[in-house]
Image (tube, rainbow, N blue to C red):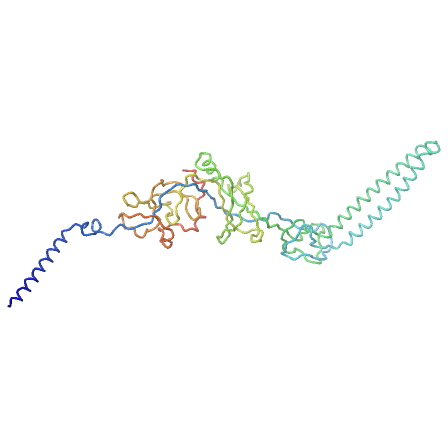
Length: 415
């Protein structure tokens, strides 16, 4: 073997020795020195959290309700006769005093004419009696006639005056009945279909219903609330836990889940409790200029009954709701995650109102549930709603549409 070959062999052996020593040294290093996580595992998973911070919030209640016309008038026939003509369009808006139906008025015109003739006859009789009484007055003073004759003449004059008054009242009655032959709208509103047709005999014996007018602007919405919730809320307000709302704005939620857009006004709360259901009836008034709302329509009524000065709200995806109760995942100071039972009330702007179970400053998981690995610690980072729009919620978490199934906020008084 030549000298050059010997040098090359020695260099290769030296290189192999250096590599072996480096490998042995690397194997002897600690995980921290090699750049890996403690224990040689995966780095802590980042999860989105929010820090519990009390704030002033309004406690809203959502209850089912039914719409009702603010004014309802049944148009009925007050004069008996044959219905000659309908003068309105079914389903249209009518004004108070507008002509709706015409009933055959010939009999009433004849009665009015007869009353006019009777009045003329009574007036003629009165003129004759008055003239005779005036002639007898100087005669009785001169003893030309007996006093009895004069008294009879004065009595005849007064009787004639009474007959005139009676005839005038008869004419007034006849004119009223004649006016009933023209059926007018008692109120302004929307009229429905005609309940009778031309040619029908109406008002004979019973008062015949002709149509129904309903005033739908504004509308009333009637809804009920249990006395249990009312009493709990009042006790919570009395104890200082909640404060009574200064004004009570009412929102109407339509059947498709959309907000009606027009604010309603709470009118009253009934003083009597329904003995069958234990409910108290409430009524609100809502404007309906476009006629979108119709009588009998089902809606949900959302209104604020109280305010919590130090309330806690959480995104709905942070709360797991189940038959055993509501829970959240709380991240401790050591990075460990543990479940925490809480008590929620209603939903406010897509967030649950937490009534009990959390303290200010605690960190609640909102995002990253799929990253949890047993009891492994996590790395909490502030939750970014925009970045985690598609983040998965915990199993059993209530969607935003579940707000209506939340218990009433008055239940907080039972704590």
